[in-house]
Image (cartoon, rainbow, N blue to C red; front, side):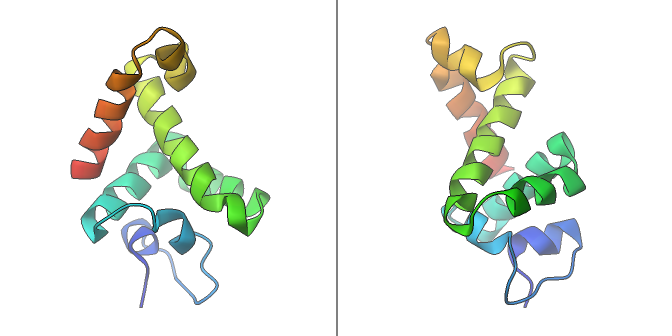
Length: 104
């Protein structure tokens, strides 16, 4: 059965799926799908899969979370992104954007 990430990307899923472990920290199938679509639209499907393939398996969930926060941060603050929001004391704005993405 396809993981929620592969399902929304309409990609074949296998037992050695690189995307499945990246999504386990997100509760709910719909939220996993929303996060995957958002990150894939921002970085591109091939870019997302390339990023994931480039890091060791134990770091992939942290990478996906980082990409999600950066994509949300760049949507809110296109110049400085998530780091700019953290630096300026507006991290709550980035967190709210991530929560909005996860809710759909």
